[in-house]
Image (cartoon, rainbow, N blue to C red; front, side):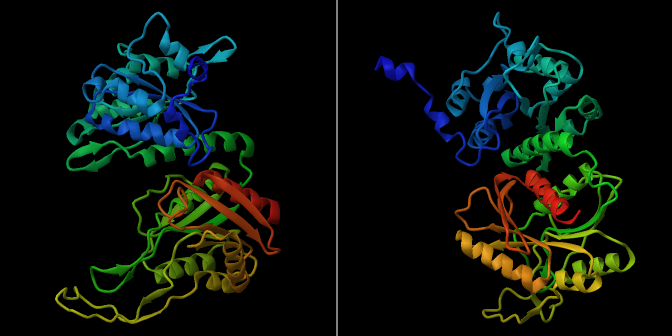
Length: 434
């Protein structure tokens, strides 16, 4: 029994790395403040752990009014910091000392109340959370801050000025979801996206610089909508995350992008080298792309949009009555964007995507390669969207893909963030064509 206890590891930590090892070796300081949204913190902690991270929790007294510290110890497998004591926890966690850094690679304030935002922005450190943030700012430990409060409080000019001040100091803000007159805390997935993006940008920017300077890309992303009547349409669950990740990666490396973004709730970045157009239907995508390729010179087309292969032959005006017991809708094929692009430009480097609902590796590769040959494209990215492929495909912040060239050589990119996949794809384009 004594031997067992000596080697004791908290059972909660068994979940570390079950989704990916993208965060393996990293430690996060998860700071909780006084907001009812703190009830979501255990889920965020465990999502970080599922990607391999170690999580340490710090709570204000107000945060403990909503959830007990024991819950966070259960969720993370680590003791919770409730006070700054003689152990100097704020420096040990996020500080910088001679020849050493603090335990935390990143501080996440989730949720962050208006009160804590104001204190952090103005140098007040009277809680363990604000003290850790003060030390983190002084030691260049990255901070992600996730606001949650009532809508009118969030829109208060003072709160907005404090948020902008923190942004100017390098703090990453994950915007809340504006619902029911409240600035609701961002989801765990949205916070994970920010974490993955920060890590990818930090590592790749150091290595790549402006290696895509003077290169011009046209990218399609998101779904299309094929209208049946004025309220119903044929579509798919694509969010456009992969196309936006590619856009961000290209811009960070000095390239120029024209992004054709279908209907999605994901917002593209703002950048002087980015032009965004908003097609709805597959025909809209084709029309805009044709206009661009006919009047401008592009180096690469990345066709990441999930365009519908079919559209109704006839669009019904108004709304088809729901009282009809039997409805037949006749469809016709939509134009093939990649084939049209190839006809317009023989020298254009074209990269396509192929999603398969199978887990069979050979089938995924064979079907993607066949599509590549049929469409006369230069590279194709294949992935599985099978329901059992957790963390992959539509709506996910991560993916696992296979990059295939015309010789059927396959590069396997294991489960990682879509931004990192974007950089790997760009590296491959550089390697093969420039």
